[in-house]
Image (cartoon, rainbow, N blue to C red; front, side):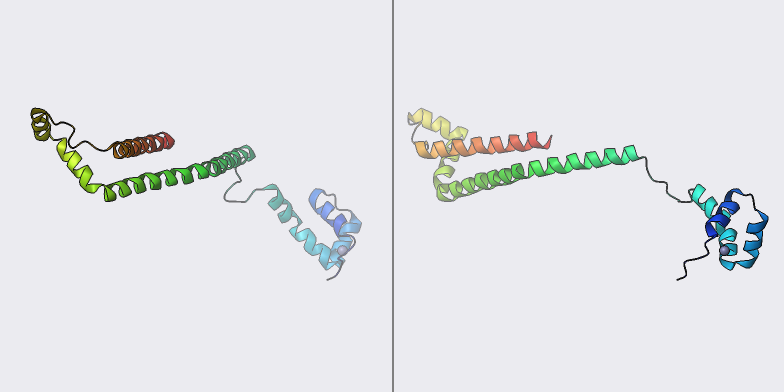
Length: 162
Ligand SMILES: [Zn+2]
């Protein structure tokens, strides 16, 4: 690759702003490189002046604001990740607790739920034996704890989604 004509800069200045001296005109006739440079000089300076892009770049302030919003969003997502893991663990614990309780104490719970029907309540009260089908204290405690946990997890889910 050749280094180019040493007078090319001078020719480009003349092509852009003028004036053409007799010496530069004469050089233009003798030098192909400078003739080519002078021929495209006006087109190049027009292209440099006019923004020919179809889609103009957005305002830098808008780009900066979007970047800030995206950064805050990703920080919030990262901060919320451990909470989601705790939430999933709570769901699994509550579901597992209910599954275990219903599996192991199904018959007792079924009898207890049936004893809550109006017919049984009336019969038990009239027979003076209201406590015959009541749950044992540990089982009642387990049911109350699981029900409380279920309500807490549900409320937390509702609050977290808002
Ligand atoms: Zn030249």
